[in-house]
Length: 58
Image 1 (cartoon, rainbow, N blue to C red):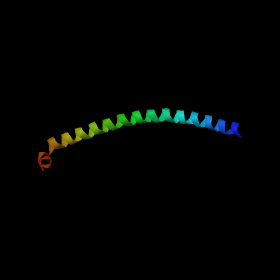
Image 2 (image 1 turned 135 degrees about the vertical axis):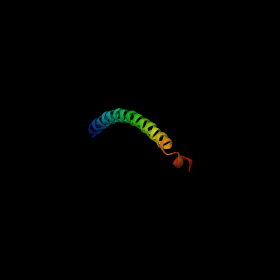
Image 3 (image 1 turned 120 degrees about the horizontal axis):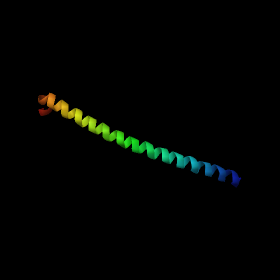
Image 4 (image 1 turned 30 degrees about the vertical axis):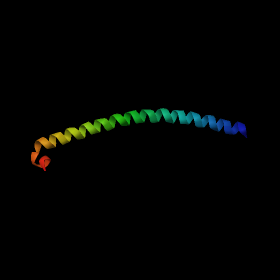
């Protein structure tokens, strides 16, 4: 029994490590995407403010 659980545990660790690496890559990519999105949104807000000053003044 212990041999079986050990093998399962090793398999779990391997999949966890693989998942962890994948997650790390995904996280880094996601963080970059978020930053780009924020920059894009800020740029869009800036352009909309210049095109319609009456709206931005309120």
